[in-house]
Amino acid sequence: MQYLMSVIDDGTGPDTPTEEAAIDAFNERLRSLGHWVFAGGLGSPDPATVIDNRGGQAVITDGPFLESKEYLAGFWIIEAPDLDVALRLAAEGSSCCNRKVEVRPFL
Amino acid sequence: MVASLTRRFGDLDLAEESAAEAFATAVERWPADGEPPNPGAWLTTTANRKAIDRIRRENKRDAKHQDAQEVYDSQATEPLETPGAQSAIDDDRLRLIFTCAHPALAMETRVALTLRLVGGLTVAEIARAFLVQETAMGQRITRAKAKIKATRIPYRVPTSEDLPERVSGLLAVLFLVFNEGYLATGPHSDPLRHDLTGEAIRLTRLIRELLPDDGEVVGLLALMLLTEARRTARVSARGELVTLDEQDRGAWDAALVAEGLGLVRERLAAGVAPGRYQILAAINAVHTSARDVRDTDWSQVVALYDQLVRLDSSPVVTLNRAIAVAELDGPAVALATVDRLKPRLTGYHAYHATRADLLRRLGRSEQARAAYDRAIELAGNTAETAYLTRRRDQLP
Image (cartoon, rainbow over all chains, first blue to last red; front, side, top):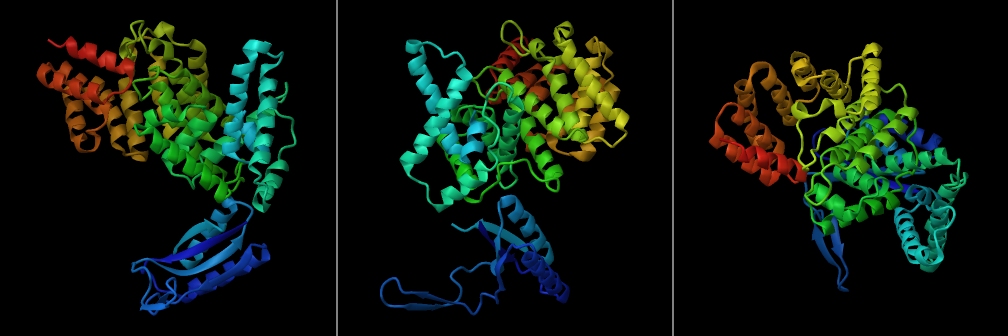
């Protein structure tokens, strides 16, 4: 089963070199234990652009679709047999990237 | 039965519905056909068949479903509910209760699910225990079951790595189940629910077998046993709650008291700093060791509450400590403490009942009456309401 682990940035701490090293080590662990599917870090939501083409005419809006102090700063997609394993990995991920992590299953 | 079916089919809804269908069939058929020689086995077989029918009928065997089926089938090796398979059933219940008490669910949801699926209460009964609408409780339980399924909360005893934390969460759930049986919340149920206290004790015993060295498990079991020992003395023939000081101590269950005291001694001998349940058990041990209420070692009780306050400074603990302080230092000292809890406990019936009793002992009848009124208004338990009403009506 695949889970999305979203990294939630609440603007309380900047990235530090130790954080990046810890994330690299965690990613390596995910790979060696067979949990790794994909991961990525995201830039700040400020330069985001929203497109709505539901009406046949694409409407372009400047800025993120959600103005909020907390935003998605990155994510992991992992393979785990159940929620207990996913939560354990999320706890590790949260500790190494120093941010909150939300766990959600894929359909 | 729900536990076994869940293990077999990996679906709580399916398990519950099939069990209910099997009982419904039994109600229809047994009066006409006669009761089968082994009713338990008949029900299990019927429920299993109903579950399989349901799966076929709903034709939901898509990839996801098969996936789940494989996970659970690989665990379902022992026969279901045949004679001699008690340990397999116990294991099932343990798995089920760890699922119900999973930390990914909100605390109230954990208690509700445990009461529903392990304790077998109806949604209406649970809704009453929580003082919420039945529809709201139904939705909460449905949502929880959907979450278990969608996020794949595992149906198993946690790994040793997760176990200590998961056990403490589980003990909290079991304690809440026990408390609902100890003093049922709602006015429409029996005041004491032996089914719930009995179930909570049974499950705590199971956890103790799993984790014999966990002091808090022993503490909680001791606390439950010492409390359960007083059960028959706690309600009078007229259906009134009998307070500890007025109970017929000869009616206490001597075997449960002995077992509980033995467990408390075991923990004292361990020489490890006690947790919350061990301290509560020790407090109950002091009470149950006194042959007469006048022999109660109140300074010991207060000292234990002091220890508890250091671990848990919640207003309810402070309230209970004040009740012991009233015996040691008098009701005036206790009342001063209790009054300070008002902002946080004003919606809690025991706060008003405690105040009422202290005011009564201080001869402040008018204020006592008002406090009894408020306590009666908030108390749902019939035996407690009856007791409080008599006390109020006896005020000069």
